[in-house]
Length: 410
Image (tube, rainbow, N blue to C red; front, side, top):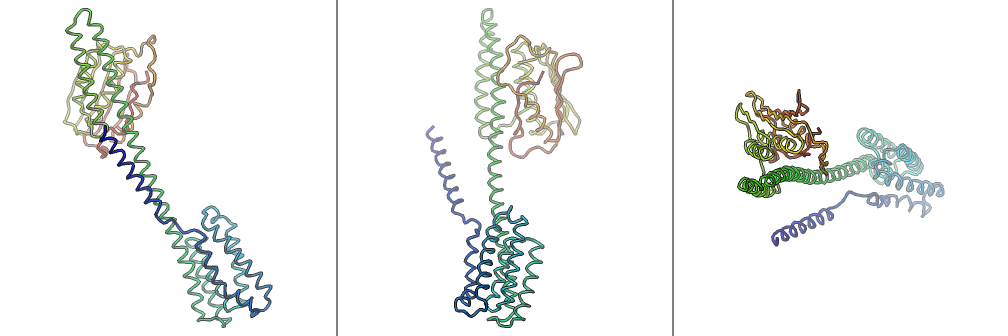
């Protein structure tokens, strides 16, 4: 008990440490990281403040509109839904118009608005639109710089800076989005793995307890009936109950670690014991080639499911197991001569109808099939088929994902 508490504490501490490391990882860049680039417009602001630009009021309005559009476009670029809306493209087009007007009208430091426009394009455009937009914008910026001829550097540097600004911005944002998607996918895969393991364990445990308790109930009833007239036979049934209980404890411990593998021969022996205690005569016929452990495990689950329902619901006197097949496929047929559930018997609470569905899915995953239904005259017939060498699961638990319900839906 103390060791279990220590293991849980260690596991919890490790999970918390991993969560803290995950929270400390740098996240994707946000829109605020692109706002400092507006300082590239300080040269244009200085021209207005010192009165070196003609029509300063028109230039001031243009500078204010450009900055407002830049902020709006950048913030919309970090929201995928807003980024792909037509409004974002209209705002980008308006920003391009203002940039062209200011660059043509003022030149000089105002040409630096082209890299800012390219940066905004990198937040909105993707793929072919981005490539076409950046190339066109770089060419236009270079042509205007050559025409104005009053830039502080060679005209081609304006075109080069324009192209690089948008390309680098788009690459960084695309990479950040990909990293976030990968993180979300990894978390989802981890969550799915945990849920799958919980489902496997709950289904496995449900089947173990349902079958074992059914056998214990049947043998207890047999012991009660035999006690007044044959104490030795009653004690033999009690010894069987003890053996079944001990075996159930072993199986539950093995199921917790996920290492339990069913055996068809073992399940048939248990089925014979359970049916005999219930007053049902078991008949077994087996032939065909040896089976792989995975095939035996799956057929063992089918035997367990069928026997539990025969004991509970069939009111049969005989139950026949036939295992045969060809070198390629093996078939298990379980047939009883019962009449179905006793209409006067109380209903069993908590019994669902997913057993055959879960078993069918597992057999199908291994390339097999399951058929179940009333017999030609009376009783019930369950037939499971599997390939001798099939695509069996490799997760170490051949019956993982199988959820027996202990009812055949009679």
